[in-house]
Length: 235
Ligand code: NDP
Image 1 (tube, helix red, strand yellow):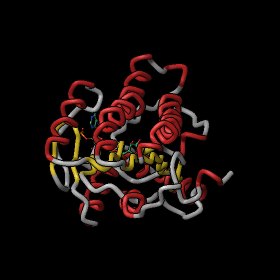
Image 2 (image 1 turned 45 degrees about the vertical axis):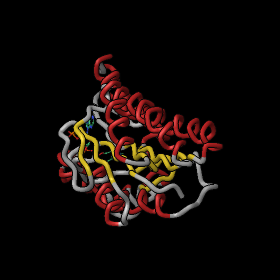
Image 3 (image 1 turned 90 degrees about the horizontal axis):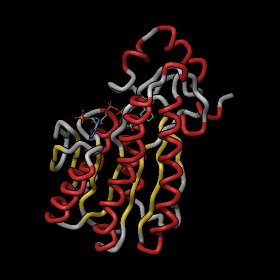
Image 4 (image 1 turned 30 degrees about the horizontal axis):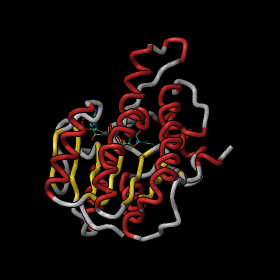
């Protein structure tokens, strides 16, 4: 398995921060990217992932420090609301970070991964990628795009020694949904719909992602791995 820096986007809080901390705890050199430039581990760089030139500059700066062995495309946004009231601006804002930025970061990481003999790309999707969820058209579309792009990366870059995987969480309590999950009605619904009985924790996702970097399972690529307490299969 290639050795080098693992770049985590959206690492200032929530799932991304947990992933960065877990990776560093397992001995990986980590670079945290976010708009605020904060992060719990490694080196922190302020970078808006929707700014193409800033992303290219960040990867050039990272590669100047040493080899790049991995990328976790985690930064994401959720804008909900009924389709009848969905603006093009909200749709495009969602796609810009959740989909376009995933492509741009992977594209910018690619030559550095290849130069180091390969590596792993983990794109954070969502179990919404295979569901039709009211008030979630833009988010569902963006996460379906993540899974589709991952499959393309896996096929196109396999001979470069690069694996690409989607990790698709179910409900994980973070700032993204804390207010929603705090409602008692939602809590009761969660208990009835999530077979494990409660939302997951950022650390659950972080341990899965870190395991994918820790084991050389070269034949596993292109897949979407759901981590959702089996909610996505509970119909
Ligand atoms: P949070 O809102 O807690 O954190 C989002 C992170 O993304 C922050 O670090 C934020 O930092 C960063 N970020 C936001 N916009 C940008 C940007 N333009 N450029 C760079 N960084 C940015 O979200 P979660 O931790 O909950 O979500 C992380 C990922 O997991 C997302 O892709 C989300 O869709 C996915 N997910 C989350 C689920 C959940 O239930 N929480 C379920 C399924 C998937 P800063 O503000 O400093 O830029």
